[in-house]
Length: 190
Image (cartoon, rainbow, N blue to C red):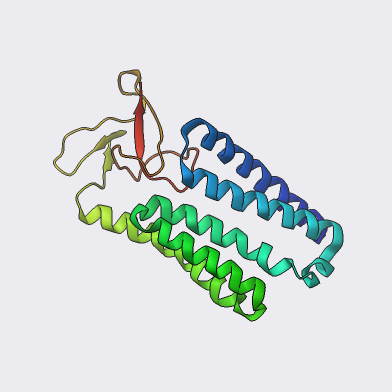
């Protein structure tokens, strides 16, 4: 039972990781690269657990490799939601990985910080944007800004919109699912 579950997790993680890696090759957004690497590591760990079972957790490499997943995904979240601080968070991620490799009981602390970043930072970013007046709402299927003016939406005059990660562009939180699942910004592609 658990081997099948780990196999499903491995397949989903590998598929998502490869898709985000393809997006990185296309758009050169670091958030896509960080999240794709985290998902590929998760897929590798899931395959290892499916093959060896829970005995794989006794390996000395289990803790550092297990810490890579939330650290890389949270680094992608920081790159999107707080791009000013992503390098500092990258330093925290590297130091955290070294501390986990040297001192295994530090795993819960580093995991907790990375998990809170993954969970709370996108919420904070959306709330911050909504206070700044850039949160859009829909009326009749068209996006409308706070002043009541209709904005561009998918399908307007054949314009195509794609995810741009942490690059400029208009901010929208009501976009359909797209490449980088963490990105909340759009860029018009010409």
